Length: 112
Length: 110
Image (cartoon, rainbow over the protein chains, first blue to last red):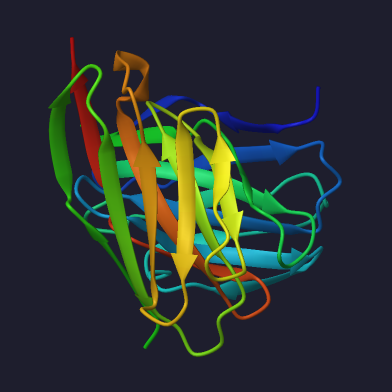
C-alpha cells in the first residue's frame, strides 16, 4: 500500500542535542512538507520541498534543517537552536497543486 | 496575510446530537477549501470545496462553501463517539502551501 511513513513515533531530546525525524513516502509525490502542531493550534509549516535537491523555508524554520537527496525521503533535523521543540511533527506529501495532501502518522518529540 | 479561523475551538455534545463547525477565511487568491479529520495521528481528508453553494456529502457528514461570506460549515448529524476528533479547515496558499485553521476539538460523549 502506498503511503507516508514517519519514524520514530516518539522521540526524546536531551539539551544541546540534534535529533532527526524520518519521513519516507512511496506515493511518487514530488512535493513534501514538514509541519509542527502544538496543542490548541493548527499546523504550522516548517519546511517544504517541491523537487529533489531543493527546499524552502516555511513560517517557522528557525532551529530546523532539512535535506531532499531522494524523492522518497525528506528528513527533518531539530537542532539545539530550537529552544522549544516539544510538539507533534507531521510530514505530508502532495501529488500536484489542487489535490489534498497526504499525511504521515506523526512523531511526538519531547525534551528530557 | 492569509488567515483561516475556526469556531468553536472546542465542542462537547452527546451521542446523537447534530453539530455544525464553522470556518471563515481571508486568502488572496481562493482556489479551494479543504476539511480534514484528525484523530490521534494523521489528518485524513474529508472534503474539498471549490464552488459556492454546492454541498458535498459523505454519510452523516456534509459541508458547504459560501464564497460571498468567505466561510464554510461542516455538519455532522447523529453523532457517534467515533466522530470525536479535531476537525481542520485548510486553504491552499499559492501553488504548494496550505494555511491551516486552529482546528475544532469535537468530543462526543456516550
